[in-house]
Image (cartoon, rainbow over all chains, first blue to last red; front, side):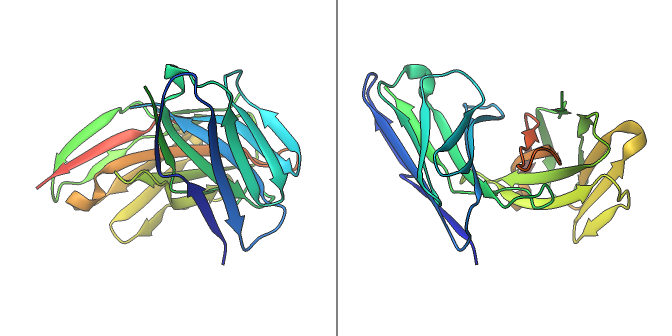
Length: 113
Length: 116
């Protein structure tokens, strides 16, 4: 069966520090991968998606970047965090085709101080 | 552009009450899928249901039921005899068949508080 792992679960980082959040999927190949952010009390905003290794699409301009160095690994990064980067970050995957929805990771709660 | 509207920001009910969460969507596609997800306090989004645009049959799963009406572009979610464990944020989402990959557009969520 497929599983998705996301870490760390919580993170407190100072403004200006770098960021690296990792997400890996097991039990499937060539998944579509997604990074979402949920600001406090708000909905889900799609940040990046990837349909293959090295293929990254950005949905909104921001201080973050994403990379997919391996088929089932998706990394969210920042060189210098801003206060506004605080939020709950969710990784998700889907197999091609619109009828299966997404499977989400357990999320990372990032607080920038 | 696709859009999902969940007009109810927060709903508070007492245990055993029935509650309906509204979802209205906009799309130009004739083929699309609708979803409901539950986000408990732990944060992880849990899949509840998906429905394709050609299937307007209502669905019931235990205390949960869903009413899909294409005529009003709505996909409402009802919890019968609510329980404290139903307290969560519920998201409605819309997808479309497109260019070989899938993107879900989420509503802003409805926070449901069920008190004992």
